[in-house]
Length: 280
Image (cartoon, rainbow, N blue to C red; front, side, top):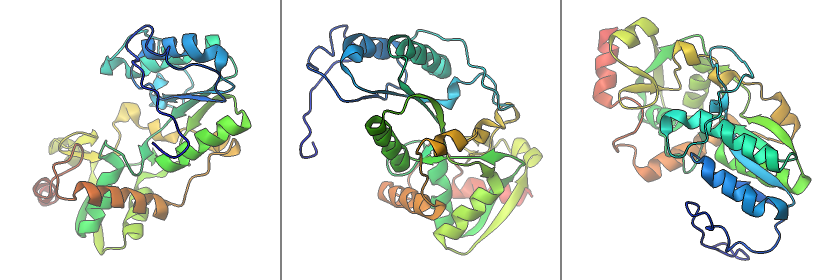
């Protein structure tokens, strides 16, 4: 543990699992990912003893990503059901706000940087580092991201400053092609970005967003504006995104530590990319 910190082991699956957390707290930050019960037990146990409360939610709570709508999904008080991720986030937000109306609800966007286990954003710095001809999606689509270090700093500052309210946690959106060009420039290797039209990607069975045989950050039509949430309120409330070059450097260092040639959760293998480029 860091100097000055005290580790208290808890069991968030047990009804009394947080009882070891005694006394009052200046701030609580709950990063419960996929469990309504965890969130409910936390507010029931600690809600009256915390000076500030942060709950890290997700833009997946929104019902419609083909438009920039504030409509939310129906809440579902469930645990560990991946298909209901957004619904569980909505139910969890509701539980927090019912107990702590002044809470800080942070609906995070695409989180990148050191520690990222999704392989989505990281695919691109890793791919640019190899150089050569790089297949990129030719699509009219905005995209945004937030570096995990900037998000963490904002959460700490929010607790210190008593920030309350609900905010989308992402940086400013830019066209996806511009973002990928910026990543290539930041990596600094010699690359040729080869735009691949969507019909070709579909024909070649390339998946959008994530997963095997995919081009990460390319979004399907019904999610096309997921990366277009307005960053203005978050920026005004203290979120300070680092320059793209710094975000790319952090992501690439993490990729290199994991191994650039490892089997990835998202992206194309060199062989798959070669076949895709040949299909053009």
